[in-house]
Image (cartoon, rainbow, N blue to C red; front, side, top):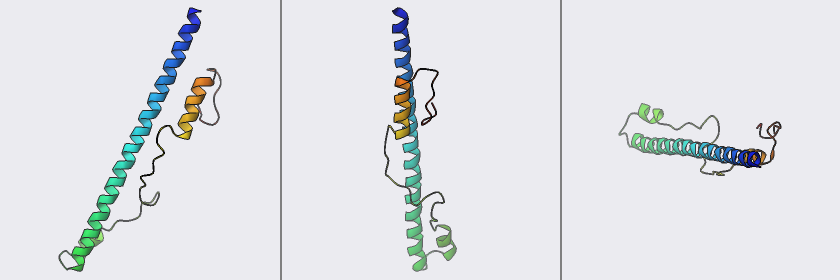
Length: 111
């Protein structure tokens, strides 16, 4: 009986550890997305400002061209849409951690 209690506590600790790890990863991704979004918006504001200043003849055309915001190659403008924690893949990982015997791996979440 003591061995079963020990195994239960071990699995509960593993689950909690996985949950915290996934939550930290989600928060890190959210912070990175917010940084990219902020930098993109700042670049847009600078480009708009330089465009107006160039129209007035207050800065060289080259400065305006250099500050032009180009579309991001991986996607359109950064989005503030964040599904949050846990993502579907993270929910799968947590569910598998809770249910699976150690010898079985989940094909959906690769855990």
